Length: 113
Image (cartoon, rainbow, N blue to C red):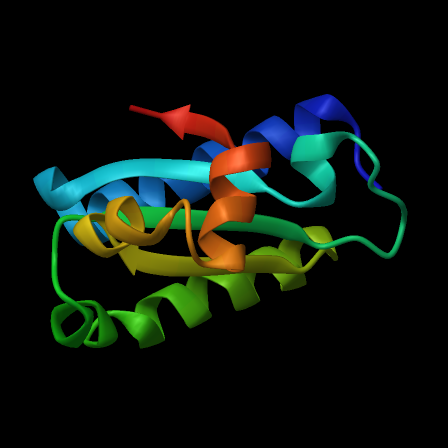
């Protein structure tokens, strides 16, 4: 469990990393899960998703960069950052139908626009 200052630092670095990787194709970064709901505890991870204006094949090319960044956050702060990336158009199409997407839409907190 982390104080607001540390959480904000991690989230800011995460948004910056997604911007670095995806540039203008980055549509938004959303915090969801227990930290978004405010019911986190010492066992909670930080769940974020980036919505990117690219297809899945293109997004898969940057998967290693995301994993490395998350690992570095874990080492530096001692907390697991669970980051995922979704095609923006796919998310928009299914956000009312698929449970995972609907959960992001329902409880998510947009970190950037």
